Length: 111
Length: 120
Image (cartoon, rainbow over the protein chains, first blue to last red):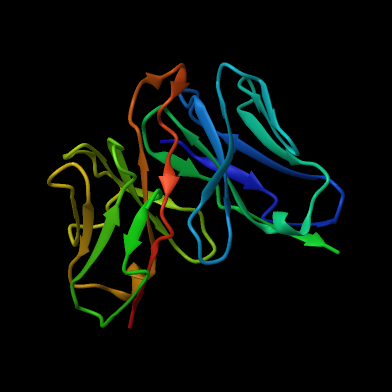
């Protein structure tokens, strides 16, 4: 079955700097890669997603890249702000199917 | 409401008790998923419904776990004879279902806030 690895498990960046989270997946049939943000006591919230027919997608300060050949995908957050502090999960899925999550990255934005 | 609603938000059970967790998906959503999230971990898939049909229950950890969605809307996850290892947050997610709508895939999953189950 699908396996998603996520690094780092914890990341601290200075406010205003960029943060990068990297993931790998194992199943070449996966074609949908969502990223979720989870704040304490809340459910995961979709922040951006990318499908396998696209190599890069950007939404304001957030961008994702996908390398299908290497089975790598990454989340980039630029100009980080205090409200970006949360746990971020990468995930992989095959269409309308279960989502396989990474173990998460706890992002701390330092003042 | 506009989002996925789960109840109760918190449940404390004594070991051996049965519990029932409810999920109200977004109105009109065809697909419904249950996930289990242990402390400090990512959510792990339990089971999936398309309307009232349970299409995948491969993630249910044991036969003590049972889920239903009899009318294709509200779903209940039932855990019988709870054990301490069942302590976790149980998340429900829903989506429009397979296919495309207006050129956009409908499979985006929207999550509820979860039910935190503590088994003593």
